[in-house]
Length: 101
Image (cartoon, rainbow, N blue to C red):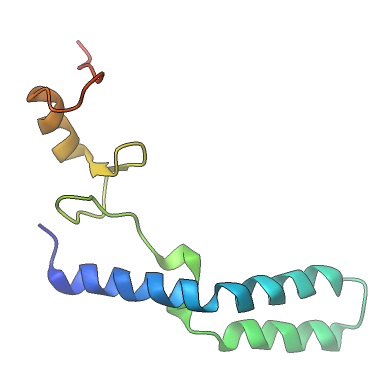
């Protein structure tokens, strides 16, 4: 089981990401449009992006196991870590999933 503080930190990052999503997307679109225009305008937009909180960037969030909160070896299809997934395969708890020989 992951520490509660790590799980809470991930939840906080997700909330920040949702809060600043529109601002981040609109400023990135402005950057694409202003590629032809002045460098000064691009610099202002880049400074606005950099002024946003770091934890609001989507690259800083991690997928976690649904049951244990483990951040490593996650399978997107199941939302579980490899360790838990293997235990569930062995116990035949996942219908349609077969073990490799």
